[in-house]
Image (cartoon, rainbow, N blue to C red):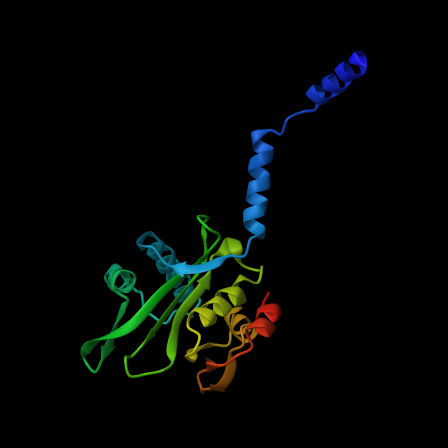
Length: 209
């Protein structure tokens, strides 16, 4: 009996323990499998949106003209205003109006930002304007565009969401996968999209996954 017990204890002690590298790999895999969440963007996240806007401008898809550092700095300050005060500075007839604004980031817990979305609206308007959204290059091609937009719709539930953009690149497909409807297209090839206030969250969550 004693000899058998010793053999068992010896076999147990011979089992290799899990290495720190293996544990870290499993933790990383678990984080990647967890569903990302949409959270308020932090001040440090603004630089990511600025880089995305510059990439979009090269492709002719940016809603802003960022030809020099002065224009880029103006956009940076506007985004800081959104993060700190929840207000978007919108030019109207030669003046600057204060619209409601929200800058949201899609991320895995404390992990890196997968993408971001900027929305704004006038105080007297029901619909939010989807001003800009992007998925970081290293996270593209995995359905995160639709996930980002679906998360934004859930966050702003009860109000329509509208946007305008050219029918090029992957953005239109992400919009439609998230339940946006193409309303019309102008002569320049820019289409208007709208996500209604009432929607089947579960159905579109499945189709956008």
